[in-house]
Image (cartoon, rainbow, N blue to C red; front, side):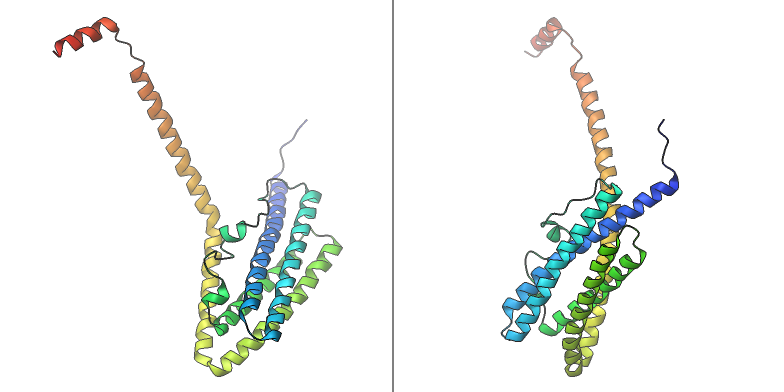
Length: 241
């Protein structure tokens, strides 16, 4: 005999799905960051700086693979179905990458460093929460995530050194850009969280429109189905002449 799931189990399943979804989002963010860092390496003339950007890019690509693998393994262990599959094009759909222009081409070097520092700190904070609050990971996966945390701390230090130099030379501008990037990060988070609401409203609008269309087609179909016969139609036509 089948019994319905208890509310506790439903909430647990939802929380598990959210944890796996968070890992998949992390993998996309790391993929986008890797692309941006590789492009930055191409655009600088300093060999040591280019090497630093390339190392950062390699870290991000490696992190992407680890996040994907952990999400896949945890999903199989917990029998989680219906998750959005990982697709490289999602990196532009979710605006991790602007297909028109790379960040290093949009921003000055100082602004780019502030952007990287702000987002690396935010990502590191979220990853720490995932590790602390995660209930779906085995010991080896936690160790892998902690290794990623060490890489993120190195990235923060790398970006922070450039931001510190920039702040010493342009204190007011650096502080203004830091505030700007924090506000922009908040805006993107609000948009991301509102994405589900927009999808829900869109489904309601489409459903209502579909029902209206069905009702209209049925009413029109009923009008067309009224057969008045050939003779009345001929008589009506003769009156017209």
